[in-house]
Length: 63
Image (tube, rainbow, N blue to C red; front, side, top):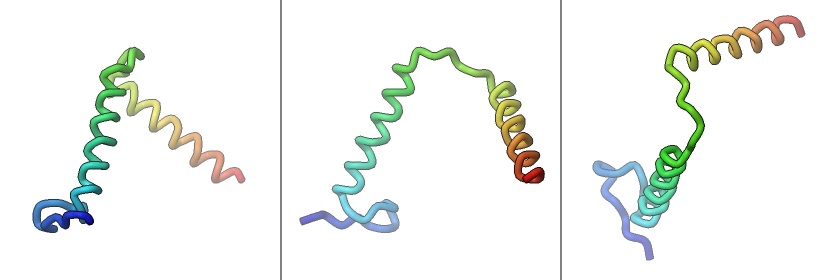
């Protein structure tokens, strides 16, 4: 049986859901710290995103 959580404290309904989310979140953080790829500066990342957005807009308008 699952233990219900107080909705004022948690967005998850049960302790099992909270535990599952916690394990998933910790694994994501661990993978990020273990990632050996070089970091991308914020300005460069934003520029890449805007370039992609503009490319998609042009492709959508053309087609």
